[in-house]
Length: 88
Image (cartoon, rainbow, N blue to C red; front, side, top):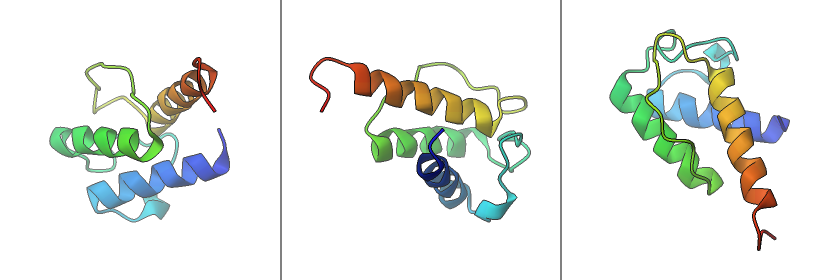
């Protein structure tokens, strides 16, 4: 994943959850970071809006889904958007 995209992702997570971005690691789960389900949903919406993508609809497992899993889903959405017909 592009370092700039990863940094932006971490910054969005930190801002939405009110935590220090330095505490976020790829292995962190949302639960580890103290992110409740409502904040997680708001964070997903913010990520989608910021990057102009739609992440796959699924129920996140806040106990086991890692930040790396979210980063992977974001990268797949970005790759899909870039490959879509009419993408600039």
